[in-house]
Length: 189
Image 1 (spheres, helix red, strand yellow):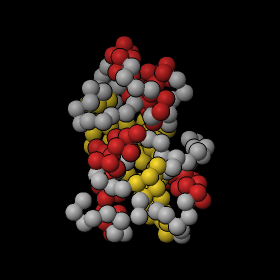
Image 2: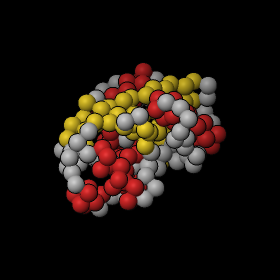
Image 3: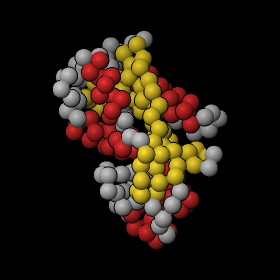
Image 4: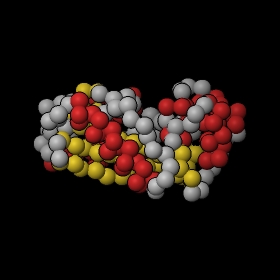
């Protein structure tokens, strides 16, 4: 049975494809919360809301939903509203560590598996012009904190402590173990 990915994220689709996990995409259009709770509570709540929306459309199927936010200096950042806001956010983060957290939910009916995976990320010290050049290769309003990465040697990132795939879009270490335990993928993955 194919997994239902409740996300339009190209990075999440790519991670699942590269891992050989069969899936279909069915993005959930829910309003994501960005305030009023801790980082952990927000990413889990948003992922649960996405999973429930997809489960209504695909009863009886395994749903995979996720939400990513970052936290720096006690403030939570989601997707920036504009390219200018993304440059401002990345300028704040430049040379300093922040926490990137992804809430992940696997759901089928009343069975729910969930986690929050946190990675510590340090963006390189870059001036605003360098940040604008790097952001020129993508639409920063689609990503938490205004950035995305696809490879370990990304020019924006100095260091990652924790799951690299979490920073890309989905903590595959956690997901592979759960999918194997549920016998949704081959043991060899």
